[in-house]
Image (cartoon, rainbow, N blue to C red; front, side, top):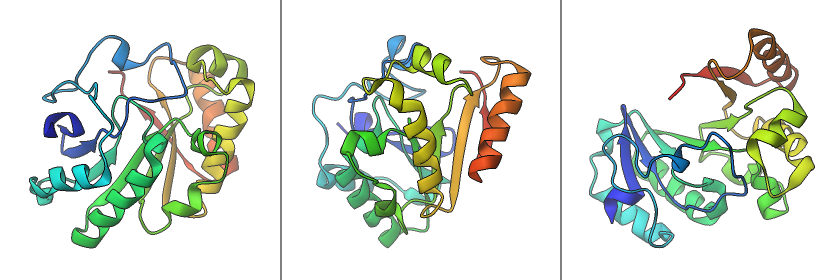
Length: 201
């Protein structure tokens, strides 16, 4: 069971909380694989409780890792209460940075602004921007929330900046043009967040 909840990629420990996601992205890795690197299958038999995740963490030497990252085969903010409880445990017992990799639709998922809940618990939020074009975003991401998703994702980034030290909007190299990357940079400059171009996997 530990293998599906916790897995290592590079020098970071990843936490797989859920397989639920409001999006059906055309490029999602889980369409073509069931694991990452040395992990077991990331398809969960059930969503782990905070207690289960903490018990799995206790079996790991967390000093070996640079960051603990909430990211798996689902949108981590779908399991927000568990995420926050586990993050609090990690902060209480280690000095590890905590990152959330997210689609940025957590406020739509919960029907409220969830970013204040992350204050003091989350160090980095990395949000998938994917493209500077709203229409293209909808075609790529296929969110169940429809056309309001793009603006909600950008609003989430702006709100998160108030409570989380580092907020990143990311795209994947080679998937958009240099001109579009410049447009993404301009969006990030306007929001006061960091723009990152991720390596293609």
